[in-house]
Length: 134
Image 1 (cartoon, helix red, strand yellow):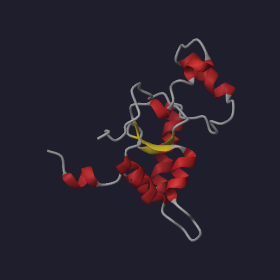
Image 2 (cartoon, one colour):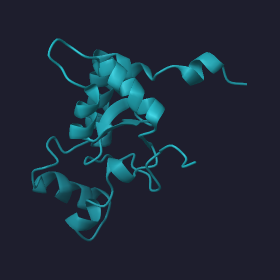
Image 3 (spheres, rainbow, N blue to C red):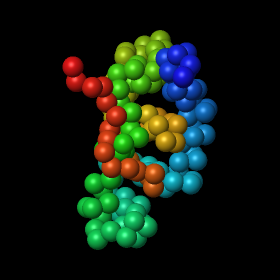
Image 4 (cartoon, helix red, strand yellow):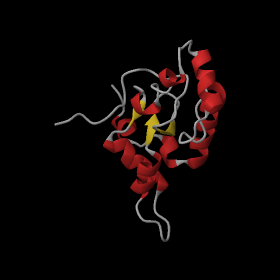
C-alpha cells in the first residue's frame, strides 16, 4: 500500500527550480526535449525528429507534443503544485498566469515542468493526464 503522504505531496521538481532545471537538462540531453522556442519554425529540430522517428513529414512529427503525451500531467493538483512552486513575489500577480502563458504541465516520466508545445523522445500517445470529469 502506498504511503498517503507521498501521494499527497507535490512532485519535488515543482517546488525546487534547481532540480527542475537539472531534470529538464537531462530531458534535453538524453531525450531530445525541445525545441527551445516552439513558437518559431525550428526546422532543424523537427527535421531531426522526422529522421529519428522514421516519419514522412515535419507536420507528422509536430503531432507528437507534450500536450498530447500520456505523461503530461495537467491535473488540478499538479497545476496547484506548480503554482505553489512558482509562488508570488512583490508585484507578481498570479502564478497561474505563468502556467497559462507557457502552457505548462508536469512530465511524469522525466520529472520536470514542461511546455505543451514541445516534445521529446519519451512521448507516448494518449494524453494528457487530467482530472476526471464529474
